Image (cartoon, rainbow, N blue to C red; front, side, top):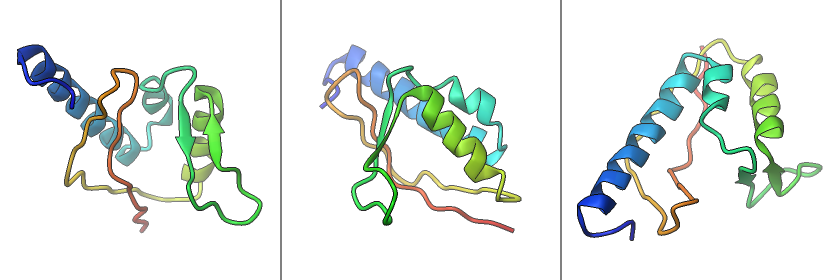
Length: 103
């Protein structure tokens, strides 16, 4: 749990704002601004990768480069953040999986 006091609630609210901004920037396809939200040592884990894909994407530069390439293939992107869960670690933020919607 993030914390039960006012500091924990404030951290949770800030984390939720960051998650909403994360998806907002993806919707705008502003990958440069979106990339600024990532920690330099961030990791995306891929629990069930397609054949030939890695089980993780490591580092901000790799994540941003990968999404820049990915989003070049889509005219638009929409996501709805329908739930929020903050991890107990102050270094970790989790959010629900998201899917791609294209025009």
